[in-house]
Image 1 (tube, rainbow, N blue to C red):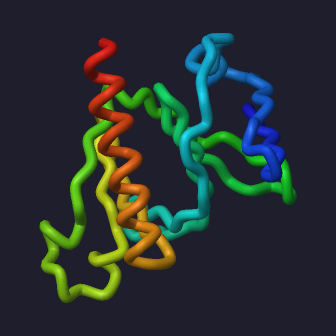
Image 2: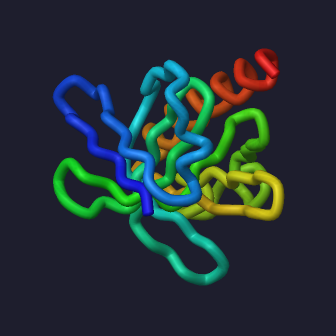
Image 3: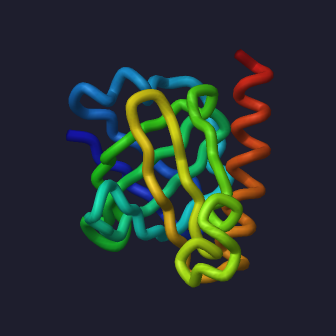
Length: 137
């Protein structure tokens, strides 16, 4: 089991890597680019999660306490693809206009944000970070 402890004031997280996912969170320097709450849908279930976008990975976690998060997924950005859900489902769909679809090998998630503006920022940061990660190899 892994936990992420984040001080929201300075946005510099201290990661404790525990369990099998620890191999992806090594001591490489990484910067936190963006973070925030999101509702994720896997199949029919929708749950609240928290995204932490770093220079090379997207960390998906559950909020346990105010400053402690349980890591659910660590997605290397070089394996991630995103799609604007409004493009696929139609722009007039209330949920689709606030959602992004995340694809990586053997997995697909629908991330729904609170507002269209928040979704726009996440799409921008994710797309830019994915492009940079794939250029680095």
